[in-house]
Length: 231
Image 1 (cartoon, rainbow, N blue to C red):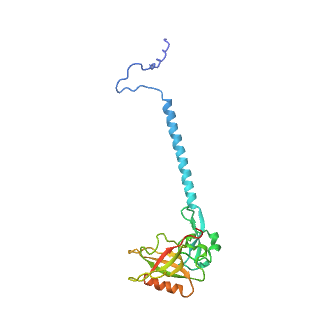
Image 2 (image 1 turned 120 degrees about the horizontal axis):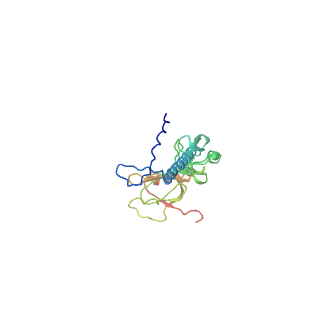
């Protein structure tokens, strides 16, 4: 009996050494350079994701940081003393662009007089209060409507001015004009003709305020800004 023959050996694969023809894809090993490049891209994406997550977390934390400040509880006209019922504590997000009075400073602002009209709901700032406590108890306010050329540009609350009485139309200037020392309380927005109302604080002696108001009603008042103290 013949011994069974051994199974045929599998065909040997030979490396392709000849030219590559169209449609024929040579078998090659993967490139280590490409594999490293893919891992670099993956690592970069992970780093960017972490950075974005940290930035979003910081933004949420910043937006959630709130501080207690003072807000106006009710309308308060210019020149009035601020009372404890005029302000309330409000929590707002911290913002460098906002500079409201902190709630811890409430005791120092109560009793000060307002430099401008306050509206309910607005945040209270230090510029809303007259320098040095504002109007004194011996002062009165007078509104003077001035046209273009009757007041210097850049008038602001707290500035010292002289209210100068001018002659009526057609009259000549004779002697020294009457002047009244005053402090600017508020400066209104100019209307279509350029006229703006400036509220002045003057001595409340019973005659200065009424006399100035009468001249202002005739349009015979010009404002002259005084130099800063100490200059």
